[in-house]
Structure formats: C-alpha cells, structure tokens
Amino acid sequence: MKKILIALAFIALLGSCNQHKEMLFNGKDLDGWVFFTREDSTVTEPTFTVVDGALHITGQPFGYIRTVKKYVDYTLHLQWRWAGPRADSGIFNRLPDNDKVWPDGIQLQLRESDFGYLFSAIPLEGVEGPFFRKAPLCEGDPEKADGEWNETVITCQGGHITCTVNGVLVNEAVAEAAEGYIGFQSEGGALEFKDIWVE
Image 1 (cartoon, rainbow, N blue to C red):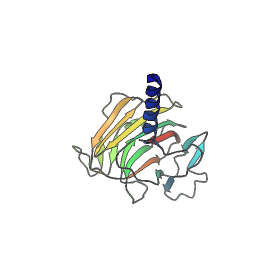
Image 2 (tube, one colour):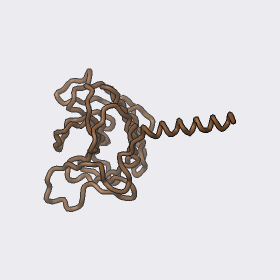
Image 3 (cartoon, rainbow, N blue to C red):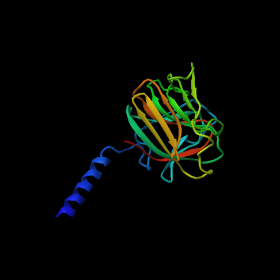
Image 4 (tube, one colour):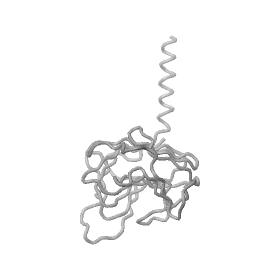
C-alpha cells in the first residue's frame, strides 16, 4: 500500500509540473504566431513555414515571427540549428506592441561573429546606450556543428534574464521588467526552431 501511495503521489507531482508547461509551437502549423516582415518584391517563397516538424525561417525578407500572447515571468526552452550557411538571426524576448523590422525587445544574438551578445533597445543595467550591447560571458562558442540542434534556455524573471546554450551560460542581464512577446528573427540566413515551450 505504501508503494502505491508513493507512486500516486509521484504521478500527481508530474501532473502538476506538466500544467505549467505551455507548448508555443505544435510542429504542424503556425497557429498562435504573428509574422512581421518588411516588403520585398524580390522574395517569392514564404519566409516562415513548417518543415519536418520544425519552424523554418528563410531569412528573407527581414523581420520576425512572434507569439500572439505576451509573457512576463517564464523560462523559454527551445532547440535551433542553421539550415544553411550561418548568417544573422536571433531570439527575441520582451517584444512590445509596436511591430517593426528592428523591434524594441531584448535579442540573444545567434550570428557567429556576435554569438551570445544581448542586443537591446531596453536599457540594460551597467551597459551604456542608446542601443545596448552586452558582451557574452562565455569563452568560445558553445554552438554545435552546422546541422546539429542546439539546446537553448532563456529565463526572464522580473528584470533578470539569463541565456544558456547547450548548458553553457552565455549571457545574463538586468533590465526593466516588462510584459512582452517571444519571437525569432529573419535576417539573412535560413535556420530552424523546434520543441518551443515555456514554463
């Protein structure tokens, strides 16, 4: 009987944990997402599509895809990889309502030359502006080889934000706490995202 009670308690605990997990991307379509890109008559293929269960971003035209819903305190989990030559892109947090090609949020930079930087239009504590750039904390580049998936976790609690890639703390900062959208940038290079969820 004692073993049964322990097992039931464990199942209940797992259930309560799962209640706090919200999948942002279902791997089938782009329901729950908003697109914003600048006009470019030379681009004929869709910028954002679902390919083999992953969110595929071509990189053209410039812009981003973001959640419909805003978030305040959360931990974002996702995987990403380059789907072609490494170029420019990033992961946005704290995006405000004023959609524009270069949005006023906090971006974890994925571009190879600036990998791990935090770029922000929101003031970052201890960093000079008006456009705030915080250098990465890690030595070297924790990215995996081209074509391999990178595990990334971004935590926003109050004004504190931390970013890890493949278990390595790449950057952290303190900014004014704000509700905002989560998004992924289209800026020149093809890449993919999957297993996107928050808790």
